[in-house]
Amino acid sequence: MNFFRTIIKPAYAILPVQFRKQSVWVIVLMIIQALLDFINIGIFIPLLTLIVKPQFVSSLSWLPLVLKNISLPYLILVFTICILCFVVTKHIIVSHITRIKASYGYQVAHDISKRILKEQLSMDYENFTRSNYSDEINRTTYLPVAFSSDIVIAITTLISEGFIALLIVLSIGLFNYQLLTSLFIVMIPIGFSYVHGRKQLKTISEELKKRHPTLLKSSGIPLEGWLEIKTGQVEKFFQNQFEKIHAELMRVFAAESSVQASVVRMTELSASIIICFIIFWTLFIKAEREQTILLLAVYAGASFRLLPSINRILNSLVLIKSHQYVLAELQPKNHDTISFSGNATSFQDRISLQQIAFSFANRQPVLKNLSLEIKKGEKIAIVGKSGCGKSSLLLVILGILKPTSGKIQFDNKDIERDNLSDYQSSFSYVSQNPFLYDGTILQNVAFGIEPQEINEERVWKALHEVDLADFVAQLPKKENTQIHEKGTTLSGGQRQRIALARAIYSDREVLILDEVTNQLDQDTEAKVIESLHRIATYQKTILMVTHHPKLLSFFDYVLKLENGELTKVSPLESK
Image (cartoon, rainbow, N blue to C red; front, side, top):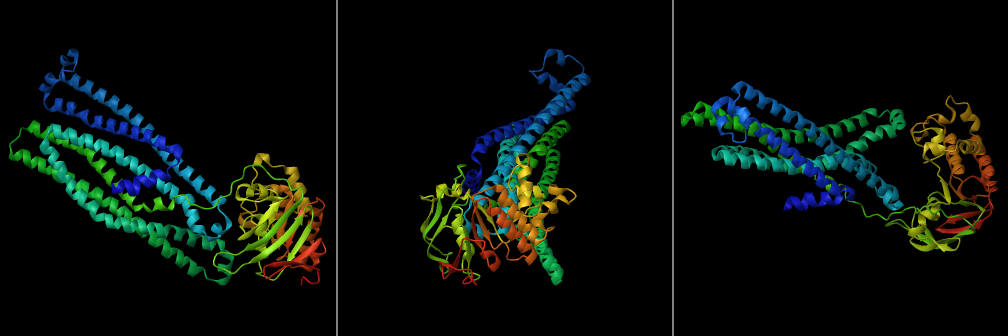
């Protein structure tokens, strides 16, 4: 009952709906496999009996008369051929069932990974910033596979192997109750071995939950901070840190493997003792040689399938118990989510922020009863001291941060959660540290567009507008040049201009820029400013946070954010 409540029920809740009915068919197929294995055991007994006691053939009422009248060697040959045909057929069927089971398990893992990634991409900004990067990577990649192989497949193994073990036990009981008693004796040390390992399994489960995300984090640090680590000459520190965490995780895996192996060793030892016991027992009661051989054959046949079943059952329990933490980690998270209906909203008139207040959890207010009206086609600069909340204001306008109070209107319509993503479809956003991924220049400009749907002419036009067309044309592979993760092969100015080219390519009506020239040299800054002037000819609405006086003449007016409030100022007052 406890197993159902703590394992089966939460596992069923995590299992995607479309796979729940399929799980029944997978179990049915595995029971069929178990029945074939069971027949495979029994099918050899008539043959062995016939070899040991040739007169046994007269008791086979189901055997056709023509076979009863042939010589013993030919009869044994017929039996052997029939068994061989069955074994080959069974092997083909079982191989097919195994493929179906494996395919089912990893389809489940794939679907759960998709669901988790969708959760991550639809969570609100505050939940996103509070989430642990390594934990989320672990939830997306490793845990769904662990759930599939070590929980779902392990449970189906428990059911099918438990079924065949029951059939074998019942059959042995009908054949020889003394033999059944000996098998129960085998179970005593095996059961003791599993019970003894349960405390270890709980510790293993807790260690796996803690160590795996920590390993992901420690392995990512040297790659993300490579330059700082090299220039600071602290390679040894981070290498030792990784080695220590990795060694601890390997120790946990070794402990899990040891628990599994101990059960197998105990099973083999017990089986060997029982075989010796049967021989001693038959000698003691002075049983006939044929009876002893037959009894050993039956026991060997039962052991050949029953003891591996017991091993698989116990090993499945080991896997389930050691990975039980996965069930809690994969439960859907109740985040506020944003979905896109596909009804992109066209900007016609104005965006209005009315009495907006915002503060992060347990912190002082960043914005206080702030009001702002952005008319279509306006170009507005926002200035203010570092840390005064300029970036937060941009994220509130984008709908990424939810105001503590107040409301946003878009063409006189209130923006709510159900139409938020449609509202956001009017915006392009460029940060001071733009995200570039390990792809080509073409893919980074036409961001998130399937390759066959990319308009290369638009890409080149966007590159021309940001003064990158000549640079890209001189590259060996031109727009198909790989720029590597985070754009490490490009300069800061080139990365910034590719982000601007991306905004031009997306052709959205409102462009939001967050200090895009803050880290650039004067020449590069001048090129970016020139690019902004070209973008302005497209009648875009532009909202930009900046510290640079040279840029302010480009805007219709300048707003200064101070103490959570906006005031209109002249360019000279913005300093």
